[in-house]
Image 1: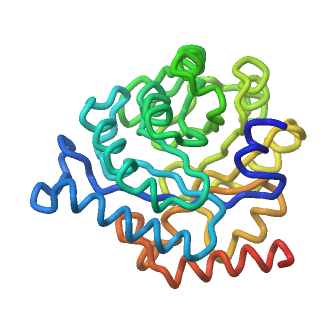
Image 2: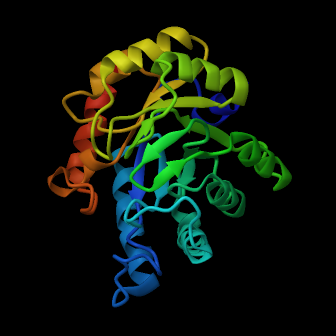
Length: 269
């Protein structure tokens, strides 16, 4: 069985984001709430998402704007602390993503026992953060050196906040990434957090990768999830589950439950 299959089974997983509050050292960090505030915020979101029945959750540091390619050690350490505090309460597979740092993401996965990671591991981009040139070979070798070979690697092949300098069509870039870098799944994104990937992009990538899981990475909404799951092998959702659909708000338990009710209906159960 593939790593993806071991983590998610043979269905089309719906993975919900636990967006941590801004971490120490980040411009938006709330020193008044401190570390305990980060833990309590993440705990409330985690409980709401698990109660709604999501297949998996992923912890990310979306609030650490402006983003970095090499994050402060304190960011990774704080994320590990928060996840460690919550580990006894996590009842579904979980993943991690330290934006936009593949090596820190892999290190965090190894430290916390995460089942999967998401990152930009391949490609060359002009981005809001400057030139972007990740190294999939280094990240995967690091994973193996840390004794975390079972961690599934989810490759985002259409980076948010950036434009690919590789002018090959997206399906060709995705197919090449699978051949050269052996990801466990490929993710297709919109231009920014909360903005949907075009269904035509999902269809085109899935057509050239019939045996590789292809997931929608951003912008899946209540009204679109059924259509997305007809094309994609799963999806990752964050903003649509928040109060008023705002990325930076807490998870709304009612919105989360409604989302998964629609997923279950789309699945026929």
